Length: 400
Image (cartoon, rainbow, N blue to C red; front, side):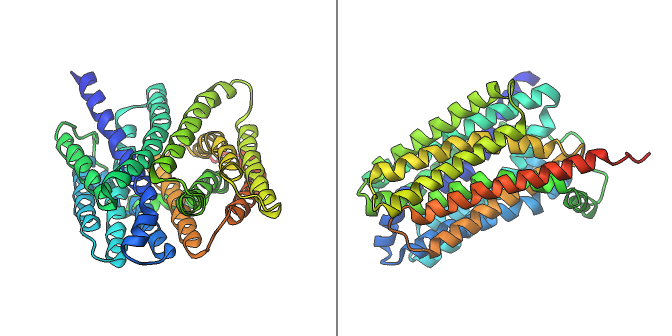
């Protein structure tokens, strides 16, 4: 019976974790249509992504420790209700500004859901069982993020952009009803005060290797959101793809991430984490160099934009998964706080990237290429200093 309940919990944990990213990607094919509907600018439509990512990033830092005291299920329900109300606001938005505010509130709710879902996994499993569940989640999440734009493209083409948010409302109702099938996973509430839980962050911010390798986990996120913010307009407005055709691209990119995640498991038997992280960074540099090269040769076609993006998405599994492993290897406790720091930093960089790219007009892949090139080179620098700090830390005598 307990094993059966664990499977039910994990099924809904996967839905909780995926919904925030699903809500990010499903409306991307609707960007041009939203621009036309509200007679507004591309930049303001892109701001709906930034406002969402901003609160999606910050929420976990606040609600992670709170869930240690009140329980995961109660906080999850609060997050779901906030998300549901905000999604209604998105559906009925009379102006682009109301849509921006509704997405801002929606991000608060999905941020809560994301952090409690991560905590539920850590509550329920340990050791090798925990590693197996994390692997399943790591492979499953790209599937949800891949099908979201494809599904959103179909809904946009058939029914319009409001129907995308109506679909999210239906999805939320399904998740809300299923929440009652889950059980509370927090076995013992923390005896420490709420302020003591927040003080756990202080130790992490003194750990240089943790912070540096943690920054490396954000590199693929920066590139991904540079693509997400730019690509709806580049592929649809500039290259003439339909919303459905644009959505199909995400299916391909998602398949690449899943396949490379499986390949990465095998590569770990032969190569070090640092080597694979550098391979991932090299692929990002190559993708950026190609986009810049195509710009200066006056080549802007579907293939000149698409193929470098394929190279970039090949880097994600190698860089994100292995950087996360290196980051968590730097600590022996405070894993809940550590996951909140990683999630918030990653989504924070995602929000910042979407904001910057919402302000930059683009008509080819040059800006995206420069972004790829710079973050790929930055990754080499980060790993170099992280390795030095890790070596220095390991040489220090342990305190008795």
